[in-house]
Image (cartoon, rainbow, N blue to C red):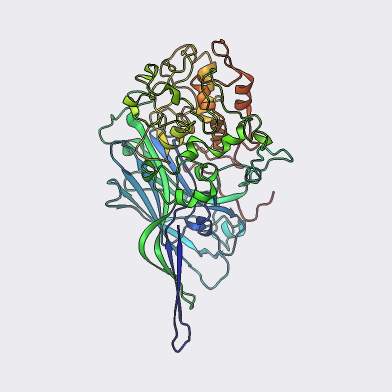
Length: 578
C-alpha cells in the first residue's frame, strides 16, 4: 500500500494562486478507526453493518450501514455530515452460482450552506452544512444504475433545543425531523439517511488495553456511549432481495434459496486538488474503494495491524483466491490467550474462555493444531460437509488449520445445514451424526460479509426468550429446553434470527465472537470441552458453563432502539449532559 503525494504550484502575479495535492489511494479500510489509513478519512469510514428481518414488518429486511465514527454530539461549529464526492454503497449477494454482487444501493450526497453569513449551523430556519442525497439501485451487479430517490432529506445534527425547537431555530422537534426524512423509493424501499446514536456497544478502553475485558481493575465503560454516527438505513421487501428463481414462499425456515450476503463500502476518486483561495476541493480520476465492512470486528480483532490496510484492499470476492490472510481465521491470535499451554495467563480477563485441546479425547483445536483434519478421507465423514465430494477441501483444507471447521465458515462462507453443523441434540455422543438443524446461511462465493437467511422467523423483541446472544442462545435452548431438544426436526428456536445469522441492533457481537473463538460453536455440535469424558450422559461441564457465562461487562446499548424503522436510536443532543 502506498500514498503518493505530489505537490505542484503555479507562480504568477499572485505568487501562489494554486496548490494541487494529488492523493493516489491504493488502499481500503474499515470500521471504528480500526485500520490505520482510513482513520484519517472519517467521512468515508464504515463503522458497522446490520441486516435483519424487520421485527414489525417481517416481509422486509432492514439493512443499516453506519459511517463516521465517534461523533461528539457537541462537535460544532462544523458538525459531521455525509461527505460529498464519496460513493456510499450497500452490496447484496444472493446467488452463490454467480460471482459478485447482484444488487447494489448507491448513495451520493450534496452539501449546502443556506445562510453563509453566520457561524451558527442553524439560525432562523436556515441550515448550514445541509445534506441532501440521491439513491440509485443496480440489479445487474453494478453495470447500470437507476435513480430511486432524488433530493432526499438528511436531518441536521441534533445541536440543542434552541437550534431545533425554538422559533429562532427550526421551530420543530428532532423526532419530527427524523420522520420527515424517511423516504419511500420509487422501487418501494423505505430509506433513512441521517444522524443516529452509535448502536455498537463495547468497552473499547478495556479491550485495547491488552484485552482487559471485563476490566480487572475498574468498572467497564461503553466506549461508544454518547457518541453518534451517520446511518444509511434501507428497508427492502424480501421479494426484491431474492435470487432469480427462488420460490416466493420459503420451503422451510432454513431455505437455502433465501440466503443473502451483505456488505457496505465507501469510494473516493483518486485525485483531490486543493486551492489556496478557500474554494472547495475538486475531485478527479477513477473511483477507488477506500472503506468496506461486513462482519463486525474482523479487521479489529482478527486481522493483525500489519495486514489491516491490505485486508481492506480486497473485496469479499477477492478473498476467495487470496489465501495469505487465511491463517488469521484458522489460527486467530486471540486463541493464544485462551490456551494454558501457550499464553493463557497473559490476559486474565479471558480466564473463563478456554478452547478445546482434547475434545472427546481425540481432537485438538489449539493454535496451529490439526482440529478435525485427522478425519480427512475417513469413511465416517462421507456425505457430511467435511467430505471432499460435498464442499471440496473448503472446510478441511490441510493440517495445522485448527479452526477451519468453525471460525473459518462463520466469518468467510456462512454455515450450512449439513452434518456436522447441527446441534448435538439427538446425536447420542457422535458429532458426525445427524442432529437438530439450527442455522443455514451458507453462501460460499465471497469472503467477509454478513450472511442472513431471510426465511428464519423474527424473534419478537418483547419475547421473554429474546436474547442479545443470537445463535448461541438458540443453541443453548435447542440443547436444553424440552420444547426443542426432544426431536431433530427443523423447528424455529428463538434467536435463530440473531448474529451470526445476520446482525440485529441488539446483538452483543463482541461477546458472541469471543465465545466463538473459545470454541462454543464446536461444543454446540458435540465437540465438547476437555473436562467432558466421551460417553458421559451430561456434557454440561464447568468449562462449558464458564464460556457461556463469560461477559465483557458491556452488554447493551446506551439508548433504547426504536421499535419501527429506522430502528436506530435518536442521536445524542449537543447540550445533553450525563
